Each structure stands twice: as structure tokens, then as C-alpha cells.
Length: 449
Ligand code: 2IT
Image (cartoon, rainbow, N blue to C red):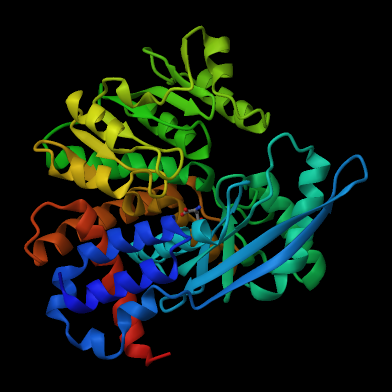
């Protein structure tokens, strides 16, 4: 391996030994940049890679909130402003009890490359808290969000850093966060957050965008193989916003999602999650805060598999859309043994590095990486920012048209970047290289800091 590249990876491993997710993403991304680094020896002199793996800054703050029974609780909040070379920091907030700096950094690093791939002016950032939203009342969520924003507001702004949702942060939380920001600042700067409700500056299609974008990307992959999405069966995981969007768009195009999962297990619906009733029920399940996919099986009379993952089900397309490291080597082998041709990552880093490598090496399996496939979400957030700064509202058709164009361009750029470096049809390396190149050019132009 290129000596400089190897040294940067070794440094990250030593420095972040207690942050395995961050090491994982750095290793995955940097390894596929090797041909680029070989071709650009000038990067080493200014330590471009060393700077890219170091967040520009990261804030840690205390968040205290009062439970309904009058007791007070203390959590930690983080915001990582990873790379601002191409635009204001942009990325979601994750509220989940397993959140710690390693998760925020891995997500911030991924976000930097993803945001670059969209072609829009957004840098990479991420934040969150180890607060556990499960079972909390609406009032508790509101008090937590208000307290969180009291700590965060001084570090963000429409031209500085623009948070959004991620796991545990949806339209409700963004509403409370924005309300508190507006109250603290005394001005209507709604470009400070995205994923807002439509009534105060949210964009049409933003709730669906990640799922819709993933399906648009999939259509590009299928077209390359001379196939159509019509009639395809899709295995998904999770049952949140992203999976919901996939179900909706897939149904519209004549395909069907047949598996969903939750922390309790997975469901198999051979007829597909295709009707409006079923798709709407996913939103209800998410809003209930119960975090159980078994509710779907109970309601629609399909089979529930407790404590199991859905990767053993034979489908045409696998789309892991729940969370990081959901697919390990064992599941990857199962997927390959089932003869699945399309492995389309959707959640951020849903595959361990060894499982990803294994799947990419299987003849006849096409692997698409999450940072390209799920980029429609943040891309539509950037369209929301554009509408906010223009002080107007685009139609659904306009946003959807732009989303589709962005996804097509991401696909094409990835294909071309891999070809340029002699890597063939490699969507994973292509996305890393194309995402890297724009950030690298901007950093090289702006001087060393
Ligand atoms: O992972 C992601 O891209 C997100 N959670 C959405 C980020 C955003 O700013 O819309």
C-alpha cells in the first residue's frame, strides 16, 4: 500500500483505538483512494489526508432535562464540525443511548464524502446525544430538545453549521429544536435546521427523500444490467423514515419490499409493504415510540421472526436500511448463497468492512455504497436550505425532479471516477474517489490549516 496512506491509517488506529466505528470508516474510505494518492504526491507535503481525518472541531456539552415525575437527568451532547471546505457543516443529530464520540466521528467523516458527492455546497458535520428517546413522553422530549438547543445554538447558524435529523430525531424533535433556537436568537433564521415541518420552512419531499433517492439510485444500477425495477422483491431492514420512503417509491414503481426489521426481530410479508394502509402504519409504529416491528405482523397477519435478522430471506435486492454494522460476514455469506444480485446499502455503514469486501468479490453481485445511495436525504436538505434563503417554496414536482437528477449524477460520477483510475465498474471506490476529489480540490485551494 502507498506509504503515506498506510501511515495515516495507522495513526488513526493508534489515536482512536477506543472508537472502532471511526477506524472502520477511515480504513474503508482511504483504502479505496490509493490510486488517487499514488497519482497526487503533492497531497503528502501538505498532509491532506491527515487533515481530512481530523475533525475541524468538536463540541461536547451537558444536557440536563426534567422527567415528568420531577426528577432531573443528565446526558451528554456532541456536535462535530468535520470538514467545512465546500460549504457550511451539514449533517444530522442522532439521539440514541449508544451514541458516543466514535459514532459521531464515523458519521461526520462519512457525511463529508456524501455531501461532496451531492455536488451541492455542504460540508460535513454530525451530532447527537446519548439520550434514549424510547418510552419518553412528548413533554420530556420537548424539554430535552430545548435544553439541547440551549447548549448548541451558539455553534450553529444558516451559514455556519446546519443540523438535521438522524436516528431518534424526526420532525417532532426538529420542531422543538427550531422553536428553542428561534426563541434564543430572536430572529427567524429557519435555514439553521433542515427536516423542518412544512408550515415553517420544511421542504416538500424531504421526509421521503432518502428512501426515494435510494430507489432512484437502484434504478440506475438496474438499468446498467438491462433490468427493470418492475416486479423486483426487496429485503429491507428497519421501519423508520428511510425504509418507509423505499416502500412507497418501490410500490409506486411496481416493486415490493417484503422484509422489515426492528430491535425485536424481523417480519416477512410475501405480498409486500405496498398498500397505503401498510405504508402509513409504519409511520404510526415509529410515532408510537414502542420500537417494535412485531406490531406490523400482529396487524397484518404476517410472520414475525423474533430476535432474527432478515438477511436469510431470498430476494432480488437487499437494502440494509436500519443502522451501522447490521450485516456481518455470516449474513453476507447467506446473502451471497441466496444468489442475491443487488446489494444496495442504505443505512450509514450497514456492512462490516470484511463483509463488504466479501460481497464485492462475489462474481455477479453488485454492491452500492450507502454514502451514494442515501445521499438524496441530505441533498434534499440542501434544497430546503436553498428555499429558505430564497424565502420561497418549491413545488413537489420541482423538488422531486431535482432529487432524481442529483441521484442520477451521483451514480454517473461514481461510475466515471472508478473508470478513470482503472478500477472498472466499482460503485464503492467510485463514490469514495468522487466524494474525495471535490473536498481535496477545495482544501488545496484554500491553503493549509
Ligand atoms: O445521514 C444523513 O445523511 C442524515 N442523517 C441527513 C443529514 C441532513 O442534513 O439532512
